[in-house]
Length: 234
Length: 220
Image (tube, rainbow over all chains, first blue to last red; front, side):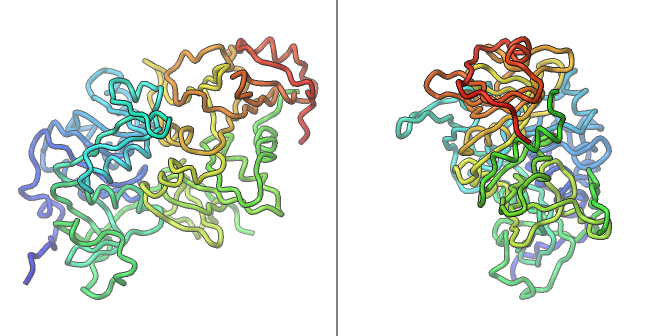
C-alpha cells in the first residue's frame, strides 16, 4: 500500500510542514482558484515571517489578505497587488517587502523552479527597473534578462477534483498558477472540492499528476467573486 | 470635440483584423470588445488562462471559476479554451498574440510606456503588462491625451518607472491617432478628432512628433 496522502482537515494537512520564515508558493489569480481553506489553516498555525510567492495578495478580509492583517507575511513575490488597502498601507509604511515580478515571469519562475531549472532568459522587463542588477545576455542579436526559478519550501494549491494518489483536475480559469505552484514546492498540499475514487479521473484529462502532490484534503469552498459582472437576460 | 471612452474604443476596434488573437487591457481597452465588426472573428485572450472570452454572463450563469484578468465574471465563446498561466504567457511571450491594446500613464516620444506605478503614491504592480509589451506583435495604447490636471501624458521622456522601452506602435487618444515611425523613432500624427486642430494637439503634447502629409479626421 502506498503512502496515504489523504488528510481530513487543513490543519492536519499542514501538520509538521510549517516553520517561521519559510517560502510558500500559493496558487490562484485574484480570489479565483485560491486554496482558501489552506490559507486559513496557515494563518491559524501561527507561523510568522513568511515570504509568499503568489500572483496577488487577496483582498483585505479574504485569501492572503488574512495573513497580511495578522502581519504573518514579511515579503511578497507578486505581479499585481491592487484591491488590497492593507497591503498598500503596509508596503507604503515599509513594513512589508514586495518583489514585483511580471506575471509571465512569475509563472515561468515557478515552472522553472519545479522543473529543476535554476534560471532562464526573457525579454520581459528589459530596460525597466525589474531588470536592474540582473545578468543580461545576447541571443541571436537580441538582449534578454536572466530570471531565477523559484523553489518553495511549501506549495499550496486548489483544484476541482483529485484522488488519493494526488492527481488533480482544475476547473476553468481557476487553474491559473496552480499547476506551476504544485511543482515548485519541496512539499505540496492540495485542497480539492471533490476527492474521487481511484480510476474516476480520466488519465488523459489529469492536469497535475500525483507525483507533484504530497498531501490532499477535501474542503468546501466559498469561492468569493471580486467583480460580479452580469448582462441582462435576452 | 475630443472622443469619449466609447468612441476611443470604437476607433481602436478599427485596428482589429479577421482571425486576430488579441489581448485587451483593463479600462477603456476592455470596451473595444463591444465594437468587433459582426463579420469578423477575433479571439480575445485573457491572461489568467482563457482564449475565446465572451460577454458577461446572465445572472444564472455566473461562475466564480470563470473570470477575466480584471477579475470580472465572464463567459467563453464557442471554441474557447482554458490553460495555465505558464501556457498563457507562453502565448504572450512567444509572440503568438497579434495585438495588445492597453492603457498608459505616460508615453514618451520614442514610444516608451509607463503604466504600472507612481513611486510613493500608487502601488499596484505591472501584472501582465511587461510581458505583453515585450512579446505581442503589435502594441496600441489607448488613453486620454492629457491627465485630469491637463498635464501632457505624451512627453519627451517618461518620469515614471517604465513598463517597456520602444514598445508603443500606435497611440489612440481622445484628441488624435499617432503612429510610431521606426526610422525616426518619433510618433507621426495621422488623424485628429473632429473639431480638434493640430495646434490643440500640440498644446497638450510636450513630446516631439511629426505630422503626416496625409493628416485626416478620425472616422467613426
